[in-house]
Length: 79
Image (cartoon, rainbow, N blue to C red):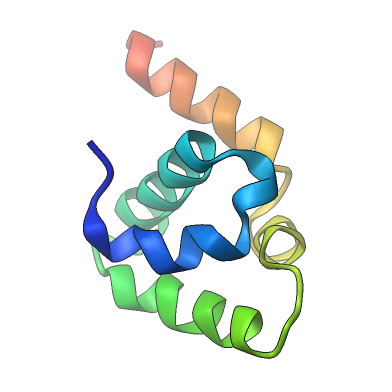
């Protein structure tokens, strides 16, 4: 299930795939922002409103999305 708070921001990074975008955003909120969704979503939404590439902003701000997905998979498998 995808939390409703993520839906708007995912529209901006939909090229990475909706499910993957939801996982990335949820992971970043939990691990980098201690559950404070606003700390991530407000700047990301501002980027998107300016017509900029949300996926590029996430990569620049948080690092390679593929590395983040590997981090998520490792956490899910307990490694």
